[in-house]
Image (tube, rainbow, N blue to C red; front, side, top):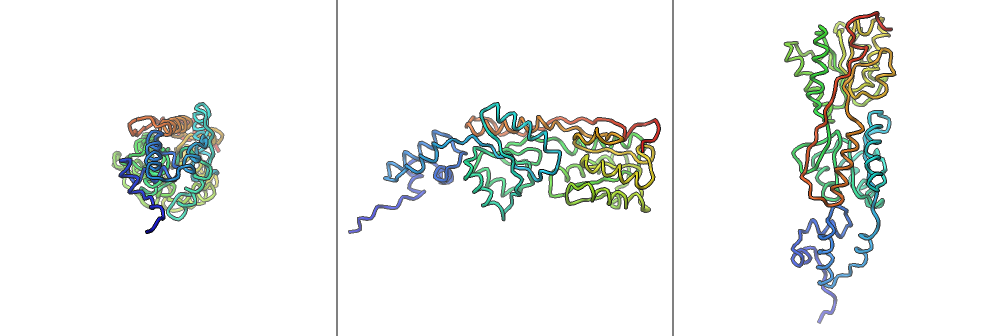
Length: 341
């Protein structure tokens, strides 16, 4: 007769506890995305089946007060105030925060998850561009909130803005100044913000009965000042010269200002410019940049507070929060005055 102990399986624990196999897996892998009472039910069922739960209980008793804030790039100044807002909420609730700029995709998924496990992260805020499948897999393992970049229609909360409406209003402002050939400098189209700001730009043109011209839409693969200067300069010195630029970031708008100067033209008399984000750069430039203000600090603050509620197991409805934006009119679209070189 074989006296070897019977192997305990996930399915046996599921039958004993009445809890799903997916949740049991999260308990055994010490995912924080499990309520304490559910975790204890799984551990109790495992004990009843003769399973040694000491290692699992030791892991679950370890303090996890760390929130990971994942961003695409530390070089993009847009994220600075968002990070500050998230950090303020984290510290106020007794959490620490670690900023991480790793890409999260199918290739890097396991490495990123291992990072979260090794740091015993309590939860994750991501502003990165993630696929639907990657988001779902992460949400199954850790409490997760999307900030700025998001995919709607999933049971994963997010805090963002209405990029379509914000971009449309910015372009309509240029049209109200009599501009009819409005070029668009846009970022990488895998990002929601770039897709939606392009939609808003095109909607404004359609509303004003202006023809879409693909030759004056500049599509860049990263937020890069020098690349934007070069692209805008080429356009300004071609047969397709625009009379205005709408830029999907203030970095691009600043680049457009430099390109206009290199072309011996004036802002805003010859070329009007509107940016997006209202980062510090927009007031430091000469002329100062008309731009769409995002409530960056609040975006970070609210996304972190939402995450902490998920970590604590509060039964909150999965919410989709859209923050208001505002067009800040400055010198790059002033209607009168001397040209600013």
